[in-house]
Amino acid sequence: MDKNQKLEREYWLKVQEARKYKIDIDRIIKENKIKQESTRKIIKAAKIVLENKEILEGGCEMYKRYKVIRMTSDFLLKYYIKTFKKYMPDNS
Image 1 (cartoon, rainbow, N blue to C red):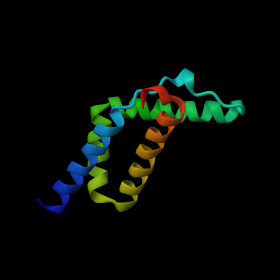
Image 2 (spheres, one colour):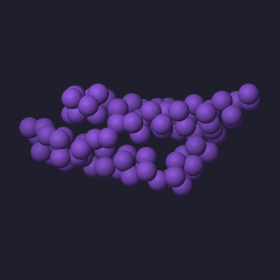
Image 3 (cartoon, one colour):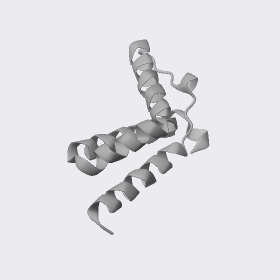
């Protein structure tokens, strides 16, 4: 398996893992309403991306080419999963 195939497989496995987590935006509640809305916007955007095949395919191509994209993608997917576990503890 060459490097690109390995990176592509790694990317799709991470996407598949993140897709397992369904976050109810309304359950994200914080005392600071500005931070609450910010978190909701980030998670809403992540949900849109995780459901859009064209965006994911483009992301995969960038993931294979650029290390900074790999690091960013890893960070965003971990943030999404961490947020799920924080606000949806009964579903983890």
